[in-house]
Picture 1 (cartoon, one colour):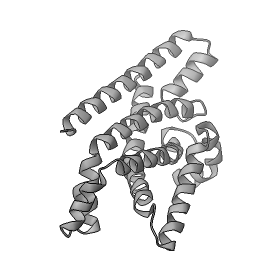
Picture 2 (cartoon, one colour; picture 1 turned 60 degrees about the horizontal axis):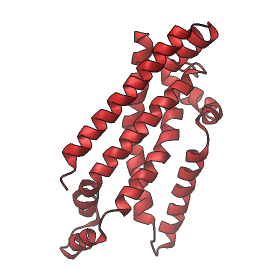
Picture 3 (cartoon, one colour; picture 1 turned 180 degrees about the vertical axis):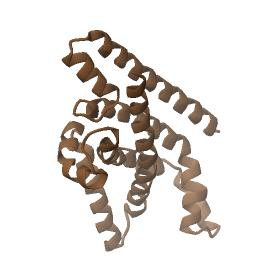
Picture 4 (cartoon, one colour; picture 1 turned 90 degrees about the horizontal axis):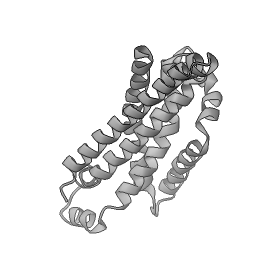
Length: 209
């Protein structure tokens, strides 16, 4: 049980770090290219939006199966916690990207215009205006995403990815041991609660409004 719990925590932590970076970049790209008069920016926006919409729409259990060849090529295995990472990241990053894009669009446009009128470059606007102003929403979004990832790790466990989901399925369900399934479920719920509490505390600390 202890090893399975650590595998679930490890998969979630590694995935959420990569998802936070990749999702933020995709969300920023969607925001920066939306409504642009440039044909190049419009095409880029369409491509990124299509990628985000497609992979956000595929059910996770199907996505795992679809990515088995790529997982084998990248990770060298399709079994164990490491093998679950590509599916976890590709499923969650598009979801978080949309949350990032929404967070940027909710920023008061007057603040951005004020920064532009003072001669701020686009990079300065991103680092000094967009990210600080939207940080509470970004942290709240990554909290929601991390909770979804915990659920995904449980589903991945059902096909051999390890973690509490794998333990609940093999040693609980298939062995007809309801106690194992119940304990694994309680631990997953506790992990979710911890993630939510940490996220709420961080949002309160960051949000100065």
